[in-house]
Image (cartoon, rainbow, N blue to C red; front, side):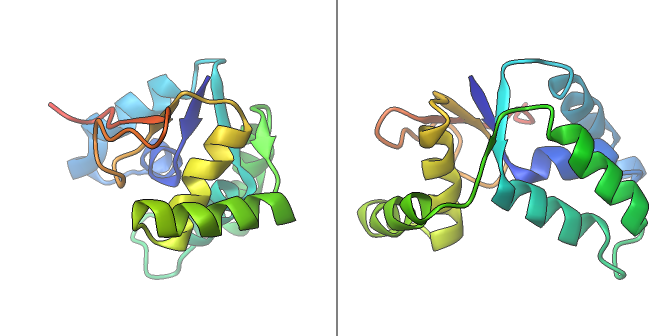
Length: 136
Protein backbone atom coordinates (compact mmCIF):
# COMPACT_ATOMS: atom_id res chain seq x y z
CA UNK A 1 0.00 0.00 0.00
CA UNK A 2 1.13 3.58 -0.70
CA UNK A 3 0.63 6.52 1.65
CA UNK A 4 -0.62 9.80 0.17
CA UNK A 5 0.84 13.05 1.51
CA UNK A 6 -1.20 16.25 1.66
CA UNK A 7 0.34 17.79 -1.46
CA UNK A 8 -1.18 15.06 -3.63
CA UNK A 9 -4.68 15.96 -2.41
CA UNK A 10 -4.04 19.68 -2.88
CA UNK A 11 -2.77 19.27 -6.43
CA UNK A 12 -5.83 17.17 -7.25
CA UNK A 13 -8.07 20.18 -6.55
CA UNK A 14 -5.78 22.85 -7.96
CA UNK A 15 -7.16 25.06 -10.71
CA UNK A 16 -3.87 26.88 -11.20
CA UNK A 17 -2.90 26.55 -14.90
CA UNK A 18 0.77 26.23 -13.91
CA UNK A 19 -0.08 23.19 -11.78
CA UNK A 20 -2.20 21.44 -14.41
CA UNK A 21 0.32 18.64 -15.13
CA UNK A 22 0.63 17.89 -11.40
CA UNK A 23 -3.15 18.09 -10.98
CA UNK A 24 -3.59 15.46 -13.68
CA UNK A 25 -1.04 13.14 -12.07
CA UNK A 26 -2.59 13.62 -8.61
CA UNK A 27 -6.11 12.99 -9.91
CA UNK A 28 -4.95 9.80 -11.64
CA UNK A 29 -3.17 8.61 -8.49
CA UNK A 30 -6.34 9.02 -6.45
CA UNK A 31 -8.18 6.56 -8.69
CA UNK A 32 -6.04 3.75 -7.25
CA UNK A 33 -7.26 1.54 -4.45
CA UNK A 34 -3.90 0.78 -2.80
CA UNK A 35 -3.67 4.12 -1.02
CA UNK A 36 -3.77 5.15 2.62
CA UNK A 37 -3.59 8.45 4.44
CA UNK A 38 -3.88 9.88 7.92
CA UNK A 39 -6.10 12.16 9.93
CA UNK A 40 -3.19 14.63 9.83
CA UNK A 41 -3.24 14.63 6.02
CA UNK A 42 -6.99 15.22 5.98
CA UNK A 43 -6.64 18.08 8.47
CA UNK A 44 -3.82 19.70 6.50
CA UNK A 45 -5.78 19.31 3.26
CA UNK A 46 -8.88 20.98 4.70
CA UNK A 47 -6.94 23.90 6.20
CA UNK A 48 -4.85 24.56 3.08
CA UNK A 49 -7.65 24.00 0.55
CA UNK A 50 -9.94 26.49 2.29
CA UNK A 51 -7.27 29.08 3.11
CA UNK A 52 -8.66 32.52 2.21
CA UNK A 53 -5.36 33.59 0.64
CA UNK A 54 -5.48 30.67 -1.80
CA UNK A 55 -6.49 31.85 -5.29
CA UNK A 56 -8.53 28.72 -5.92
CA UNK A 57 -9.80 28.19 -2.37
CA UNK A 58 -12.51 25.63 -1.85
CA UNK A 59 -15.60 26.40 0.15
CA UNK A 60 -16.06 24.72 3.50
CA UNK A 61 -18.66 22.38 1.96
CA UNK A 62 -16.45 21.43 -1.00
CA UNK A 63 -13.48 20.65 1.24
CA UNK A 64 -15.61 18.79 3.79
CA UNK A 65 -17.15 16.67 1.01
CA UNK A 66 -13.68 15.83 -0.29
CA UNK A 67 -12.49 14.86 3.19
CA UNK A 68 -15.46 12.52 3.38
CA UNK A 69 -14.68 11.13 -0.09
CA UNK A 70 -10.99 10.59 0.74
CA UNK A 71 -12.10 8.65 3.81
CA UNK A 72 -12.80 5.76 1.45
CA UNK A 73 -9.09 4.99 1.84
CA UNK A 74 -7.68 3.51 5.05
CA UNK A 75 -7.04 6.44 7.42
CA UNK A 76 -4.54 6.29 10.26
CA UNK A 77 -6.15 8.05 13.20
CA UNK A 78 -4.26 10.28 15.58
CA UNK A 79 -3.38 8.13 18.56
CA UNK A 80 -1.00 8.35 21.49
CA UNK A 81 1.04 5.57 19.86
CA UNK A 82 1.40 7.63 16.68
CA UNK A 83 2.49 10.70 18.63
CA UNK A 84 5.09 8.70 20.54
CA UNK A 85 6.60 6.97 17.51
CA UNK A 86 6.60 10.25 15.57
CA UNK A 87 8.53 11.95 18.37
CA UNK A 88 11.09 9.13 18.28
CA UNK A 89 11.28 9.27 14.46
CA UNK A 90 11.78 13.03 14.56
CA UNK A 91 14.90 12.50 16.62
CA UNK A 92 16.11 9.45 14.65
CA UNK A 93 15.71 11.00 11.17
CA UNK A 94 16.27 14.68 12.00
CA UNK A 95 12.92 15.73 10.56
CA UNK A 96 10.16 18.04 11.68
CA UNK A 97 7.61 16.40 13.95
CA UNK A 98 4.98 16.75 11.21
CA UNK A 99 7.06 14.93 8.59
CA UNK A 100 7.93 12.23 11.13
CA UNK A 101 4.21 11.83 11.89
CA UNK A 102 3.54 11.26 8.17
CA UNK A 103 6.24 8.58 8.00
CA UNK A 104 5.04 6.85 11.14
CA UNK A 105 1.38 7.00 10.11
CA UNK A 106 2.42 5.28 6.88
CA UNK A 107 4.28 2.65 8.89
CA UNK A 108 1.26 2.02 11.15
CA UNK A 109 -0.88 1.52 8.02
CA UNK A 110 1.77 -0.92 6.72
CA UNK A 111 2.51 1.20 3.66
CA UNK A 112 5.86 0.64 1.97
CA UNK A 113 5.89 3.92 0.01
CA UNK A 114 4.95 7.52 0.65
CA UNK A 115 3.84 9.57 -2.35
CA UNK A 116 5.08 13.08 -1.61
CA UNK A 117 6.63 16.10 -3.22
CA UNK A 118 7.71 17.47 0.15
CA UNK A 119 9.84 14.63 1.49
CA UNK A 120 13.16 13.70 -0.15
CA UNK A 121 12.58 11.60 -3.26
CA UNK A 122 14.01 8.06 -2.99
CA UNK A 123 14.80 8.50 0.72
CA UNK A 124 14.24 5.34 2.72
CA UNK A 125 13.02 5.67 6.31
CA UNK A 126 13.63 2.21 7.75
CA UNK A 127 11.67 0.41 5.04
CA UNK A 128 9.35 3.17 3.87
CA UNK A 129 10.55 4.75 0.63
CA UNK A 130 9.51 8.18 -0.60
CA UNK A 131 8.40 8.55 -4.20
CA UNK A 132 7.87 11.95 -5.78
CA UNK A 133 5.23 11.22 -8.42
CA UNK A 134 5.86 14.59 -10.07
CA UNK A 135 9.56 14.20 -10.80
CA UNK A 136 10.46 14.39 -14.45
